[in-house]
Length: 219
Image (cartoon, rainbow, N blue to C red; front, side, top):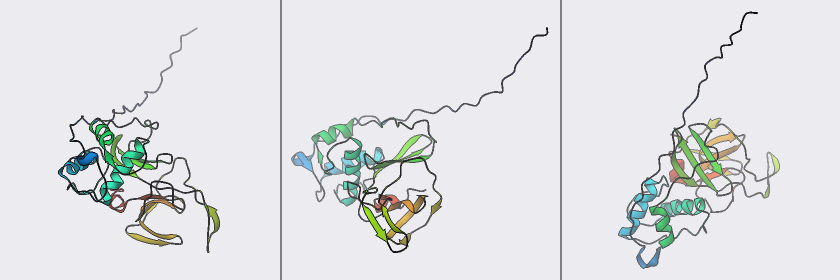
């Protein structure tokens, strides 16, 4: 009996790099104990710069706590499972100083992807397995609604894995309103910019984004 030899085909493995974590920084305490939208201070510029470094887009780093800064603060609140009050106080500053990106439960997924967290109401964008953006979102509120063309539905943002199938540059007028720079991933459900992004689910099923984030999220 002649011995047999089995040669297995070579396997191809992908080495996933670890998430690059930001170094800790020293940040000044908030003036007066806390700052919120409408405030101006040199300390706020430091908080904005740190939020920008951590991929929470606060808009211009100018020391002005405006609506754009608030969206970044709310996204941080959501990620930390804190009250979504949009206020920077000392616990916020402490966490901002030592923040580390969480390891995604879908870390074995594609290198370039968008994750919509329906529980926390945040969107995380990865490129090369690295976090490049964390933004607040507002998804389907679960309520029943009706349109003239498609009948009645429930406002649900579906869970699952999808691919973007269509993009409209600029404004698109739909049956339920205007969408800015929509990226469609499930029929008429899209990730898109909107003038109002509440801290709770409020949409008809789409995932809303702050307008300044929607300007570039697909680039």
